[in-house]
Length: 170
Picture 1 (spheres, helix red, strand yellow):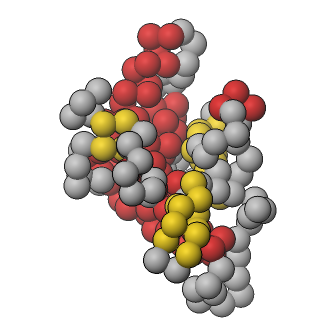
Picture 2: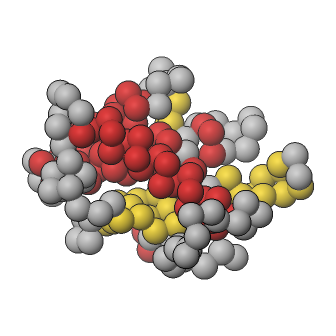
């Protein structure tokens, strides 16, 4: 089981065989794409809080207590951090591997959007209605950033597995 923690290196090159490093590189790349989307016009939003602070992400995080044991990605409003569980085990061309949620652009965009919502409007989740709006805004922005289809999370799931959400068929 992968261990959560800080991925760092004294070299700009990470090991291409270590899944944790590959996931971290994908997560950083995806966060940069999402940051670029929000930082440009018409949003001009610098980071999740609008203060251009570091983007905090934890890969291989444990599942949140209320989500069961399955793979998940979630936003923590108290620390302004995105957390991603290891992913779903799947048959891959090289055997069995994980399809980590942090490596999927739309999932990173969804979680980042929760931070933007919190940092700009404090929509929060005080009631079922505001929680539903927060979730739907995060879905829509995720699909605006990853525009290849109307599905959320499909690139991180085994072939034939239904997407997390399909906005063409909600």
